Image 1 (cartoon, chains in turn red, purple):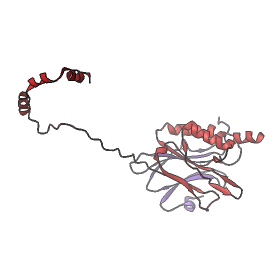
Image 2 (tube, chains in turn blue, cyan; image 1 turned 90 degrees about the vertical axis):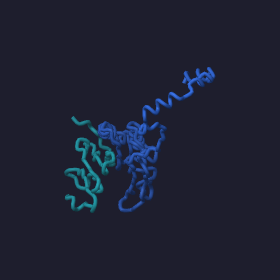
Image 3 (tube, rainbow over the protein chains, first blue to last red; image 1 turned 45 degrees about the horizontal axis):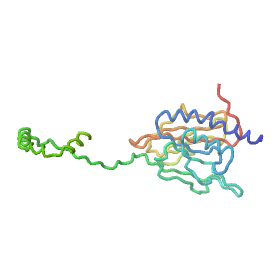
Image 4 (cartoon, each protein chain N blue to C red; image 1 turned 60 degrees about the vertical axis):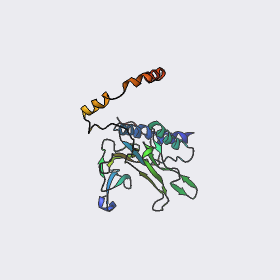
Length: 161
Length: 83
């Protein structure tokens, strides 16, 4: 019980020290990428891991790493995390199991280019070669009396559009 | 410790050293073609030992991104609010 209390004290800095800075960073309207070792294993159920995951929930960040980053003979823990505020930017992420340190290397590839929008087509009339007198002439030659032949119900439905 | 010891060619290093202690601190290596601004008002090492290095990174004219490198030592120090 005492051990649990101590652990909670240890990670209190996430709420007391990291959270205010993160919120300040959010207010700058930029995408945020946070990475490092917070000594909170998010792979197993433990108070530290839960504290970090609850931090993610609080700031609406996504934790990208899903595999252990520190493996010893008798432990596998996920300590090195990458948090992103906008997971849409993430192209790929993962763990490189290289042995230059007792921790593996975590990586993320992000794409900051805004996605190209699919082209939309519009139909429009070009007035580049518009000649007012010819247009008036065309209008004058339309047999407007045929309008009377259009069914009244059609007429009404046009009004209802 | 001078930057020349930790330099990687083609990258700029941004360091947050823990003063008065050897072997602590965090840093960020950023490709030298990227524009970087260290956000000094956000960057700090707290009493608890929590390190936060905040930088703003921009590639060409693309939108910039805030990157935070964090480290929390494995101990159980309490985080007392600063007066």
